[in-house]
Amino acid sequence: MAQAVSDFRLFHVTRKLAYNGHQPLTVGAEVEVGEATNPFFGFYEHARTYSVTLPTGPVPYRAVHFLKEVQAGRVRSDQLPAVAVEVAQHYVMLARELIMEEVRREVAPLAPSRQRCLWAAADLDLARQWKARLGGDARILGIAVTGTVFQADASLLLGDSEPLSVTYDRARRYWRGESGDAPEPEVLVAGRITVVAEHS
Image 1 (cartoon, one colour):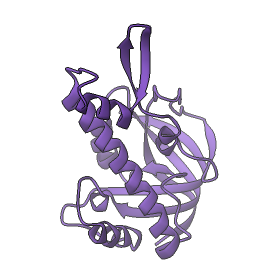
Image 2 (cartoon, rainbow, N blue to C red):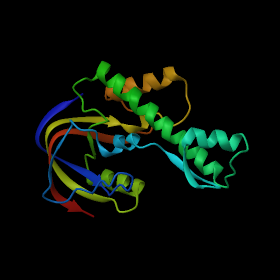
Image 3 (cartoon, rainbow, N blue to C red):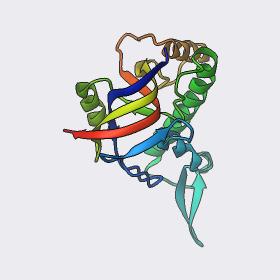
């Protein structure tokens, strides 16, 4: 259930994103979250391409075109297994997020949209788990939220092939605030966010 909060304390894992130049938040930053597309969903504004070297030089092929050219034998790639997994994961996550937004509007219209929210953790130990999962230059920040929060279970998100009816059922459970068998708690945040501290 979406909850209106004022000066509500949570933890956020921030990092630089190479694909769009997104810079990590820093202590003292104040941001308004919930209207603009967030950096995670903004990823889908960029076409996934793979470089193919032709006699005239390198040419970017869009993901599915690249795979079709490899299948037809017109392009050779030693990286085919990795590329195939990347492309499949790309479209699984896009389908997931489109379905999640559709179901949010039906089940929990007051909850922050996953396409425009900031993700947070309710406690420092959980934030450390998310930091380890994200890796790289991820850092943990303490944030104060005045706006709307929604506690959910990320284990209910689509991650692999399954019947569409199951995906919709799990999405409804997510937006009703239910938990799966092995919960992965996350908090969706919208509103005014102030970064108050950095944690190790």
